[in-house]
Image (cartoon, rainbow, N blue to C red; front, side, top):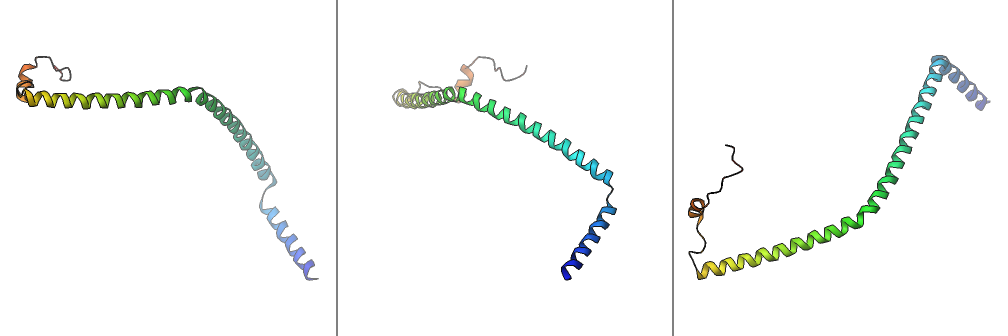
Length: 120
């Protein structure tokens, strides 16, 4: 008996909710949801295609990128070694011949090249 009363009350509440919402509005909402779903599925397909394409492009260039990265690191290491040797040689020459390298004030006087950074 109690279950029947609950079912009847539930049915009545359900009927009241149905009267609050227009069926035309519900159909309009459903149509909008289907439109949005279609657009999201299209966007998902485009993004999946783009991801596949990006993965393929990355696979093509990743070995070159890796090789070039190793080359650049090797070149940097070589240049660091060269500049270290140059600084060492310069220090030895300066110790042996103190006048071999002009100081900053004489360097500016000796340098007659135009400053390309300064506007005229």
